[in-house]
Amino acid sequence: MQAAPTLRAHPERGTQLALTILAVILSVGAYVLVVLGETGKAPPDIAAFVAAISAAFLIAHFVVVRLAPGADPVLLPTAAVLSGLGYAMIYRLDPGRAGDQFGWLMLGIGLFALTLFVIRDHRVLDGYTYTIGLAGVAFLLLPIAPGIGRTINGARLWVGVGPIVFEPAEISKVLLVVFLASFLNAKKELLAMATRRLGPFHFPELRYMGPLLVAWAISLAVLFLEKDLGSSMLFFGIFTVMLWTATGRASYLVLGVVLFAIGAFIGYSAFAHVQDRVTIYLHALDPQHIHTDGYQVAQAQFAMATGGIVGTGLGQGHPDLIPSVWTDFIFAAFGEELGLFGVTALLLLYVVLIGRGFRGALAREDGFSKLLGAGLTSAVALQTFIIVGGVTRLIPLTGITLPFVSYGGSSLVANFVLLALLIRVSAPPPAHAATRARGRPRATDRGESEPTVRTPRGEPA
Image (cartoon, rainbow, N blue to C red; front, side, top):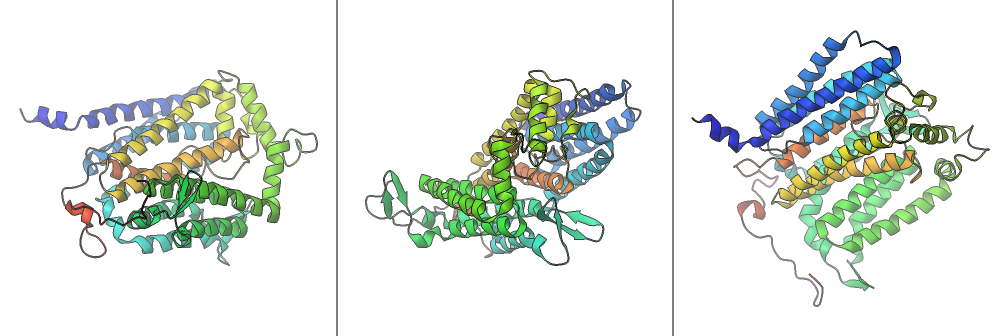
């Protein structure tokens, strides 16, 4: 007689289980269709694949049920579908790389579970603001360290320690979001003060614009030292969105756009690789570029045009003609073989993931949780927009991955850690208050109001 109330109290458990099983079915189905399309036969290892992928995703499901009861039931299954579809496409493009991707997927799910086990209350991270921030900047700039930094395809993004090579910017992405959530939550009243007016916008005093200028400088440093246009755009975009979320001031968005335009002009004027990206963006199909530096982008355009509305079918196209298609251009591979319908469905999965992420963030009462959830979700949203926009020539191409889908261990593992934090934010907080670095909860966690900061007379609320 006690079981029914328990089930009714946690209806999301059944929802998440059903969606996780559906994610397994879709992943297995995509894998089988890929092999059938290429060989005409069912994959010989189908039983082992079904067992492994089912065990991994179902274990992740039960970890969420046990360690984060009440969490959003849609986040994990959506990420599972994306990673399963990504694995199937990578297997179709390069079976050898698919083995590595599967190993990284298992590692990512393991760290996903470990993150939920270790961080029982995400609010404890609010007590380590500057430690986490310094670690994030250190990881971001680690590739320029002599002896361990690696340059691949013209960008110094990698760190090699013995046989292990990874991209520390993916780790830095998560750490810097945590830092910004804590820092902006503590300073939001000061940052929201506006004493200058320009047209309809109210701007803060110059000394309060310091964080935005520092983020801008770090983004330019990444662009200059590591030649990484993608990470530079991503980190500055995340900071600007989180600053706007914390303060509610549209003026920060305006300042962010202005600083981005200035940074883009400096980057284009000073760095040859930025000039090359813009040239390819504008002239990829021109005769002088289509067979040289614009070949990759041109082939991606042809692939998506070939796919049309419904695609050629999994395993039936020629996306392998696109150089490095399994990383930057995997979206074009889906466009060719699944068509407009397929990539629309893929993008809708990201819309669901992003929408549920923001929903979970807005449901929390404390400012740190809101900013952390919004920042993590913004990271996924901006990264998806930057790479999809680059592949479709909406914006210049940058070398970042499509979250959960593209080939790459650093990205896949980091995104599963990000997912764990997002699930932790979406779950109702534990009954006990989080302990802060100063040894006591913030005023808002004790049910008290935040201290009021006096604003200049006449300033709008």
